[in-house]
Length: 477
Image (cartoon, rainbow, N blue to C red):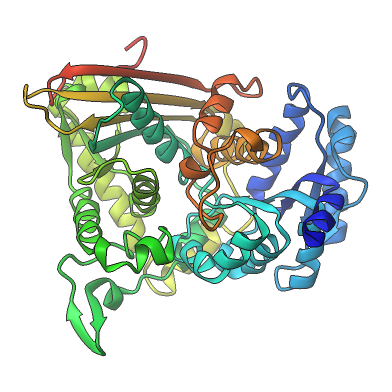
């Protein structure tokens, strides 16, 4: 109790933006500054990182530009290197939420999570590093469970649009059909924008263990997996004891692993007039988040998901129909060639350093012209009538995926922890979880109501429909 009171008394800052001098962090700060005008309650933001000079210059720059920023910022900046656990604990003691932009996360941010887990500070980040997030849960779940911290990764474009849209579709279906067992979910992305240097370098540095993906160890012997993994265990983000290392979930693991492989094929979709989609380029990451959410919230015993990207967008995919396979194949081959080039030893790293060094990113003018949309369907098991029930959710964000949408998603996640904590779903067993598990309807509501950058949120449900519909439920389409 004394430890809890000590933490409560020292939470003088609502949100600390750690890694505040990074490229995406500047978009985060701009969003927070704009939110001052619209948020009913005032809030205090501190900038954190390792360079006092750069942080103070950044705070001064924003304060001179905006009176709202001057009111929002804490009097001092917080200084702690990623290796300084003691310094990070002091920051966590003073912060309700740490919004972490210091990537690559496996390199710089393990101690940030450790500090939050021990000191009871809530935590959000924008990482897509699945293996690192799984490792953090294994290491610090007991600390977070004891302190009451909520630790939520994947709060940027990876993976809130996918995770939250599917959650909203499932919830809409269950609101209309309470006992519905969701058999499948499909997510369709449409986005325009580019990748920042930090994102590219993080992707290059991510380790893929092909041997572990293909083989498992049983009683000291290597055995070929029934279904090999695609870039890691599909259950690695689930609760370590209850699910991930529970032998009762082996069949689920195999089903999810197979769905990740099948998702890598070109698909035709009846609702888009048999238009063509390619696998979402971040699906090996996002699908592991979706799988963890599906288990945590019990979507259905036979649930499987696909995550797709529409190269021609929602409208033109329907217009072109099957002819869309031409741009789909061109885009898919381009992505594969780019990935192969960047993963080439020495050459890939050199090219990334030359074309997109860490700290570089998409210019503001291009970011503002970008678009980010996600459309999700959740389909029930086939009923005796041969029909299904289906929930639909569509979200459209203003701005590119990697910067403006990512900043909005992580800021609204932080606001949910600061302002809506009492309305959040019951905390997970150890405080770790996916965005939809931790935030649920609260984050959907925040997106609906935000005045900083309005998000078009459309949710629908239909019962007794054919399994292969010929309609997309997006207004004005």
